Length: 228
Image (cartoon, rainbow, N blue to C red; front, top):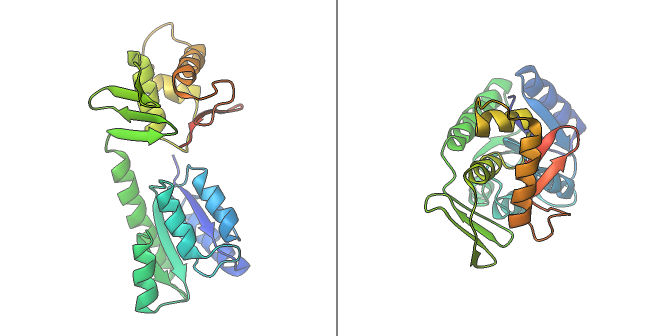
């Protein structure tokens, strides 16, 4: 699956250069020109890397970066800016950025830094999720302990595996076929409808309003997506 990169940058020329450069490497690239819009798009999930300018309309890059980390964004953040003073670099790194590139940049250096960041992000994704919190739910996959609003509840084996898969790939849309392959392996007589049924069971246990879920979402025609 191609890595998804979000560019948050207000200069059309820079957006065009970055989009062409990164798309040519096979990355799935999207862009926003406003800080607030970029924050919202990044927070929706599914991005492996955010390339973030500092001087943005709506909301500055430092605040976007800091807020994303507070919201639990665990993808890479590469700050790209004309401000090259050491104080700005330190502030950017302390706000949650992983790396910092100063404009004008050399394309080879930028691609090398993007590649290095994505390798780190994907390596981290291989680490199993041990504990996770969302809404009023607390999940401990190690101890097999699950709390909703402080009250314990239980999960069946397949519900457990399904929830762990959704959380591991939070923000990404997983098709029914992908879920079947990961959770049910090669079991015979299992159909995509099985996924729908187990999703409904999870919503009944986890969502405050199962009829209007906030965390386990249906993406029409594509599959399911977990959002914190």
